[in-house]
Picture 1 (cartoon, helix red, strand yellow):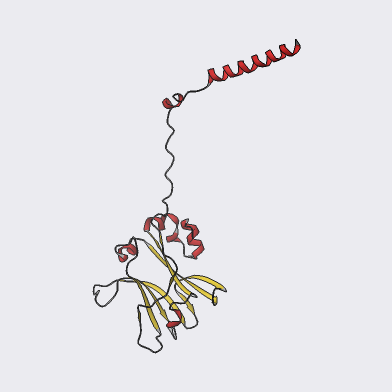
Picture 2: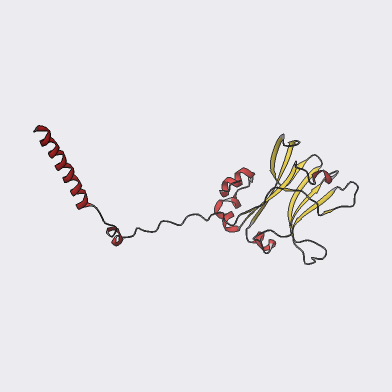
Length: 195
């Protein structure tokens, strides 16, 4: 008898809890008439318009007539997302060019340096070239080298270049325009890029 009474008590308790849960449960319709919260503050602009090229072998478009050649130029006439490179830079856009160079050849020790780069007689730098005489000169980004022989840079895994193109609004919002340090890892972190 004690067991039957105990079982009935347990069953009554479970029935009471179940019925109570059903009665106080919400329906799917309950939340639709609530008050919407305030809109949060706008976030920082993302990096969707930042353009980062792949690492590229150096390939001279022109070299001087010296034998061996002591200067060479590599041209980037078209950069995705930039219609007019001169206007892009004038309005605050930033173009950074990096050199990945092997300190110990064949990948033994590699450094990444922002151009300009100088080591002994090797000097590499980047600039923007604009012209009104396209039949003679090239408009675009130029990587130039001067050395006792610039051919050792060409198609060499120990010398590769990459550019990072940052629109004016992102450069200003990220603080790039006020900083002088342009270390590659620092820029990638500053812009929130995955490399």
